[in-house]
Image 1 (cartoon, rainbow, N blue to C red):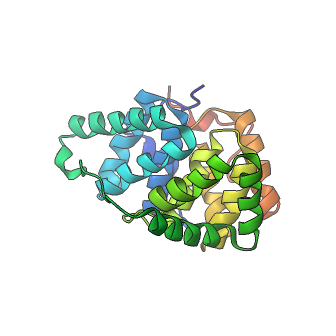
Image 2: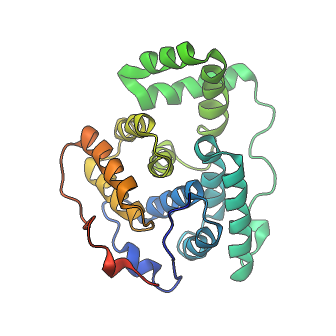
Length: 245
């Protein structure tokens, strides 16, 4: 089920507002991750038109869509890449600016596992072994693939820094109703250097893109379980001022 509200290009900037202390560049990429996970093609394209005007590194936009396949699946990542193509064409942005070839080829499996473990340890810190052991207990195959493909091949790729990638992971997970994983990655963002204020702002920014009170009530509780209680910056009961239809 897609939750995206109707987004008009002319009003997105007003809707989102100031993202400080979350850097605007990171906020743009986080919105892309959230819309990719949500899967509403038309609204994703509208959001991407806005982001393409604001965020000049088009390869980073593409990269965040690609990484989101780890959480939302190949179909939604592919659909978002198609929305990116359409958004670029509408605004006459040259598609050759979006790298058509793979960033990396032929890395040895041992090298992928090594750099994947380094990122894994940075995200999970003291809980790294416990999380790895739990994955191994549930499925040795999935545990191995997460280290090799997820953290080694995808999330450690060049082009986007680790903290921004992790904030984008948090953004995607908000839409998927997977609270244990969301909680782990909120803490992971802190472990990589995010502040509590940046994470609260991230929640506010992402929430403004969607009409899903019940979903985001649950998301806020997960944030509070990691960050402590905080009054939301926007009313969860009255969102009329954010309606553009």
